[in-house]
Image (cartoon, rainbow, N blue to C red; front, side, top):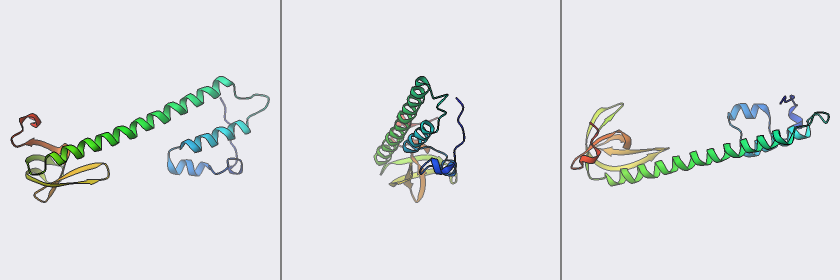
Amino acid sequence: MAVNSIDSSSTGNVSSSTLLKNDQVSSNEFLQLLVTQLKNQDPLDPLSSEEFMGQLAQFQSLSELMDLNKNSSSMLLSQQITEGASLIGKQVTGIDSYWGYVEGTVDKIFIDGNSVYLDVNGVYLKVNEVTEVAGDDSLNVE
């Protein structure tokens, strides 16, 4: 399907510079583009219903994948918080990319963005960098 270029005055609030700057198209922007495409299509060569339904199906699939990704990230963060909280007061060993080998007692946890950190004697260690928990052989990674 060929898409003719259109000027920014016919697209409403969506411009090509906005789309390039954000590098993602929101659902509202997609729908605005779709409506603009329908308004500006060649009356002698209209978009077929199959193409239109195909675009809507692709949009729906993309929307569901984005929701799934968001939910997965949220679940992973929640799991890391639970895991980190369970390590408070325990002896851990880990390998940090900056400090190298880290060993000590977990004093507290904190969250920075999508990462959960353990405060191990003043050194911040990501939960996923723990290689051993004293007294818990199930977490040894050797």
